[in-house]
Image 1 (cartoon, rainbow, N blue to C red):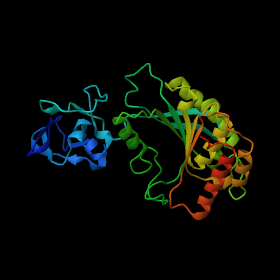
Image 2 (image 1 turned 135 degrees about the horizontal axis):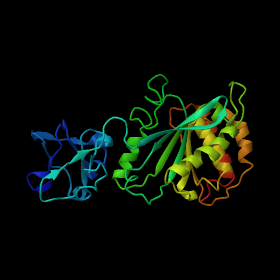
Image 3 (image 1 turned 45 degrees about the horizontal axis):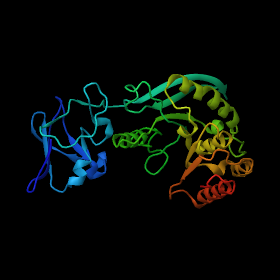
Image 4 (image 1 turned 90 degrees about the vertical axis):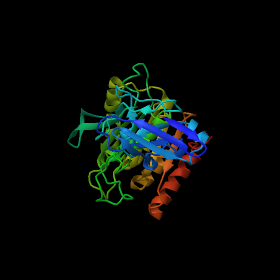
Length: 331
């Protein structure tokens, strides 16, 4: 329940399932941030309460939800485990009937498929993050993003040795929690397919300083003709170009750009996150000159952190200018 009086401000009262150790409230008033969620006071068994005198009427009307921990993994759900709508003002005490499952993210599926071997590697593990409403919306087809990553470390500012790379973990890329936060605000995120590979897979051209590189064309063929068809045959993904994206970080960013330029009829979006474009800079520059923007709706997104070195950032800028010169950033 959410009520207001001139002296008491905004009050939240809620009953929760047995065994609930803590309860938090999150909403527009804290930008839907679970990390900033307000911890409520346990009044009696299964009853939590908090008073928030600074919450505005406008924020209150935007809605709120309860979570049992500072992560969207622990958000309240309906009794069947599906999402509930954002709460608004009610006359009676609120009731949480169920929390979302704890532990590994409930919407991440792990599929292993057998593909044409490249350098002896035949099995490919696909980590697939499904939207919250996927199981209960059987007629809907969702936007899809294919993300290519190399097994490295992305925690504590990217210092190697801190934690194993986990695309969906809150201790690494934090994608699952970010997606949860967007979905709870009503923003559609679609299906995300994360695919780990290695330098050999993700490098379109050989680099003499790195043994075992340069099989990017073979991996592109595998990706386009084996991995994507598997996803399209087993999950409800949209086949519309503007709803099909490819992205990557590190070497995966190099690969994503290489594939996207050649397949603008398939991918309408490409996202590059600290991409290792330096690995094949000269080859990539020549490759960009072969292409024009053939899809007017094609969009390219670059993201580079300020901890990257000067040479790294200079390469990113040079490639950006090459793409701009070929019309890929034209409005």
